[in-house]
Image (tube, rainbow, N blue to C red; front, side, top):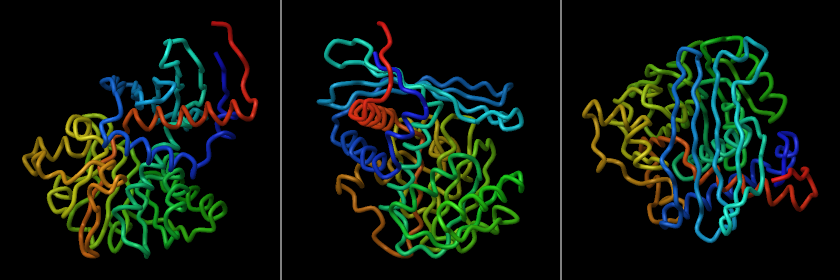
Length: 326
């Protein structure tokens, strides 16, 4: 069994490579070529944390993967990263452990960034004039990096509950990407007149309201990956001309769709497509410049299997890692 460190995994998987691997994984999901177990979700709200266990096998793949990843949102005050986790990779032929990926949440971050970029590729207007980034943590950084792979970066307004975090985010992204990033005083100011709104927070109360959205705006919501989390008011989904989810069952149980269904603002039939349907071309995505569109992304095991396989393949080719006894 191969052991890979976080540093080795970061060297093995780039944002662009993850984008294409995740796109193919969503296409496989849409074609019925993926096996996914149910998600295990552990809400440790009293410790300001939560954990997910997700996995998948893509038809024909030599390996399957199981991921354990979590977020502890008060960790920065302890000098620790928010994200934690690891990925286990097994042989699909024999079941033997093939690799232990000590990624510390990196693969989750990069595959989530890739999903956000795919949503923007198919649902956001081109060119963009303004992006609202709601949340200024690690995932917001991955979202912006991945967005740069599919769109020219426009003016960006970032908001965080902690203004100091938003200032750090703006400074770092200006330096890294050469982007025009400014700090918004509040969520409404960031969202108004934005072509693309990305929410990447652990919020448990709605942050974004429908009447702040301009015609033609696209919203990608990432934070609602458990029933108690919510970033969008249900009226955002009710107002949208097109609602897309990464996985209908997960979104109905854990995502923004969950809250809209519970409130009676939408039915499952109001969901236009899953993200994989846009990748395969079975759904056209945005068809009009004035449409308001929403992507509800809860994070699907096929993404984890795809980036884990990519990390293992690239690391083996580069001679990285060390063997562990099994």
